[in-house]
Structures are given as C-alpha cells and as structure tokens.
Amino acid sequence: MTRFDQALHDSLLQDIGTSRGRWRSKRLTAFAALAGSRYRGELMVVGRAVNGWTFGWSADDVSEAEGRARVLDAAFKPAREQEPLRWVSNAWGAPTGYNTARSAFWRVIRATIDSLELCDVSKPNWPAQIVWSNLYKVSPFGGGNPSTSLCRAQQTKCIEMILAEVSNWKPRRLLFLTGEDWAKPFLQTLTDEPLDRPPAGPVQIVGTTTSGARIVVGPHPQSRPEVPLVSAITEMYRVA
Image (tube, rainbow, N blue to C red; front, side):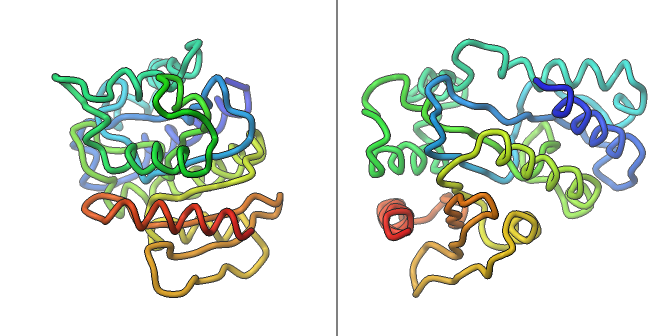
C-alpha cells in the first residue's frame, strides 16, 4: 500500500463518515484493489462492488482517525499476502461458504483468461494473472450493491482511485463487468477519445484510455449467457 493509496482511501472514509443517507444505519465494508502475483499488465477487471468483504462497520466508526485506521488495515490486508487472489481458486467449488464457481462474475473472468490464452486455467494460480478492482470501494456488508446515495457519497474519490489504479498497474486490457450505466462516470475520466458502441451483442462499449489500454464494457454477467459474452469480449480485444 502506497501513501497515496492510503491517503485516497482515508479521504473516502472521511466522506462516508460525514455524508448523510439511509445507508448510515447499515453495516458497511471497504475494499482495496488486488494485483495477482503473476500479473504482467495483461488484464484488469472491474466489478461494481463487493459483498461481505473483511468486516462490517458503521459510518460513525469512520468519523474518527482511529476507526478509519482499523478499516483501512483490514481493507488492505489481502494485498499484503503473497498470493492476494488465491482465495478465488481456493473457493472454486467450495462445499460450504462462498463458492466462486457459482459466481457468474468469476466464471466469466476465468473463461476470458482462458480465451485470451493468458494462462492454463486448470492450474490453481489462474487468478494471479489479473488485477481485480471495483468501481465503488464501500458497499453494504450484508449484501447488495451500494444505493444511489451511497454511490454519490463516494463517487468522486472512487473515480480518482480507478484512475490511480490504471496509472499504477498499466493494464493493456481493461474490462468492466458492470454495465454501461455503472461504468459511465468512470469512463468519462479515463479517456479523451470517443467511446464506440459495437453492433448488437453483449459488449456495450469499447474504447481506449489516455494511456493506451483497450477498454471493453460488458453487462454484469449474472443471468446472462456467458459463452457469447466471453466470445464478444475476446473479439473486442483481438481487433484492437
């Protein structure tokens, strides 16, 4: 964790501590992006937000520096591990708890890695090839996406974070599995070039960041046909 990362996250938590909304009565959780140990700049994947990550805390808990420090320490703890994304393959097919094989999000990522021939996905270290981030770094601990007001409370800082992450990890491919509506405010700051809308199909937007990364935006994969989605994503990257 760099001081810049820590400062941005701390500033976001300060905003959460002072903002107003019905979400203040809920337990919240904080997330920090993770880079796999074998990441070599090939692919960064962005989701909407996490559920049940680390531990639950309240907006009042982060109104003071001591509470924010505790939340930040937990949020960045996975990044300090030797294999930050091994939990994905460890939980693949898990008989109890969270089973990543039942997650459309992780199935599409795994199939995309395979289709792009980034590694052998039959090996347990396949998640180590990517950077994984989310648009919104604070979300309800008990599940579900952040509400409109919770998104609004953190959006400015979260946009800064995505920009910092792309600048730091310099991915050649940037994949948003979020839907166009969720990604739009972030995309507007990632590129000065016009974004293209491909012909009818599951991929919604393609473009290029100011640093040259190929952007592909698809829907959240839940309840979507996954094979056509992966094929479309792969094609959009190969034609770039």
